Image (spheres, rainbow, N blue to C red):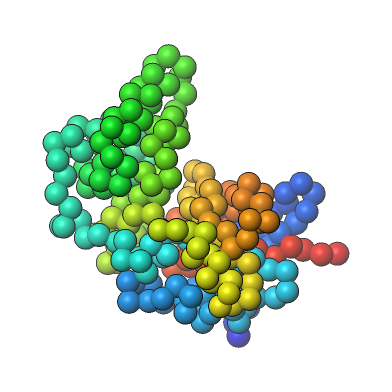
Length: 234
């Protein structure tokens, strides 16, 4: 078994509240709708896990196994999607809802009224309070979890929009039942992150979001969609 190493340019260890944690990325094959996420966790994650470890898995590959990756060519944005997407702040870390196809998916996932309300609140936040980020706070998890292709997206997903996973807590619990280790489903990028699902309510989502805040899996083409959180003991 090969020794796990941090991805290039990423730190393998982080200290949170005086405790050190290793974050060890795990390489896999290219995950698609033909895969079962429990099988993937068992094949790649379980052999590397030690007592006390937590397995964390990118929400994107969970969604892919749920057939939640949609080819761009199959998405037909309405005029409203074009209008709203033009006002989304673009970043180097991901397209978000800044393209008509991803915005169309948000309108379908969240509903037109919620997206319009989120857009209105965002405008008020930016103009009156000089603060960003209100759109996703109002639009919610479904909108925040939509991923569009960026410059380093692995083919064929450079021509897909990936929606958020369905029932991430249930998925995490099923994985734990299969592999015997606690599991988190995470939505982490180079700007922010959150824990979408955990295999146990006892797991502290805020703590694990802090442990993973610098995105040890990487944002580009590393093909390490899962990893291990391991507390360092002295």
